[in-house]
Length: 142
Image 1 (cartoon, helix red, strand yellow):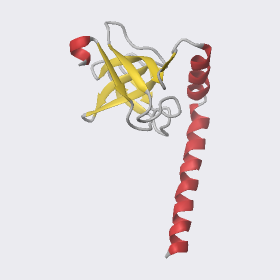
Image 2 (cartoon, helix red, strand yellow):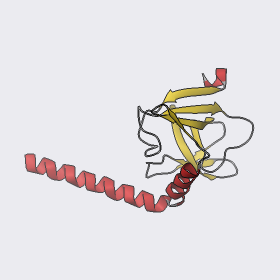
Image 3 (tube, helix red, strand yellow):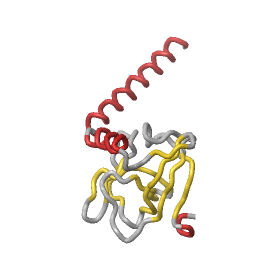
Image 4 (cartoon, helix red, strand yellow):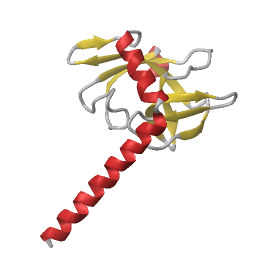
């Protein structure tokens, strides 16, 4: 569809881009890539391990990109231009378009991405607390 029409509109599946994108609620518009390279903070659709992935570019390197989902605690290195199919240009939530050029979106991107090490630590602590809670619940039940 992207190759044929130059764009793709679909409902987000997966939680790796939360809190920006809500699973099975938000609709994104992806535009096919052009000749120019992508930029830091672009959200791109790419193929990795046979899967289609929508994540954010955190670093542009001469031959590849460093990419991560907004909700992920790991970085993906070595994503090349050949793997990237397109870039997100619109978000629609509850029938309303959310601008990618608004000051709110730009503030979110900078706060969320520029403090990646802090966010990563918070997400890891939350994940560890969740695992401990589950383990304690299992011990109590059985």
